[in-house]
Amino acid sequence: MEISLAIKYIYPNIIRETDFNVLDDNQWDWPYIKWYNTSFKQPTQAELETAWVEVQALQQAELDKQAKKEAIDKIATLSDQLNLLASVLDTITSETPDQAIIDNAKAKFNLIQTILNN
Image 1 (cartoon, helix red, strand yellow):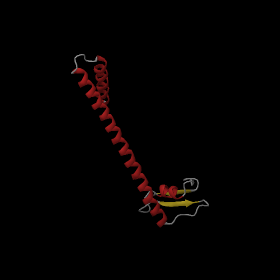
Image 2 (tube, helix red, strand yellow):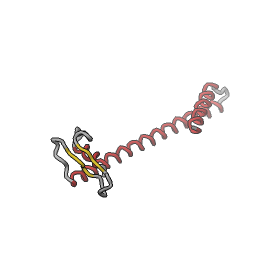
Image 3 (tube, one colour):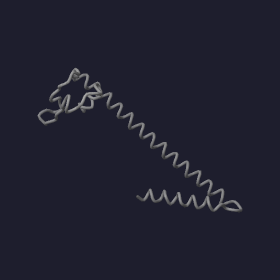
Image 4 (cartoon, one colour):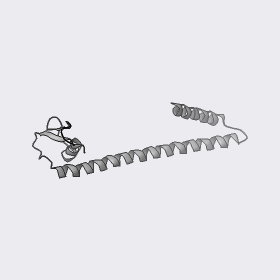
């Protein structure tokens, strides 16, 4: 458990190093509140554990949100690439290919290749 995060979750306005300090000095098997000097009631172990579970849930929700955003961005990018490819196929199979579409596709595919190689 990250006690500091649990305390900050319970009391968002509390300031570590000013209002309290947590120490992990290897004398114990866990970090502990070294000192607590604030008008906020010092949380009990049970309150800290409950807060820590909630903090972890919020952190996981944020990770899930970020992963979903990245997946959507990849899908959108793939969709854009497929649309570009469809445009290129349409133009190169027509009687008068549109060179601007072909040049645009080449530039975008070169950009993708550059990004992938870095």
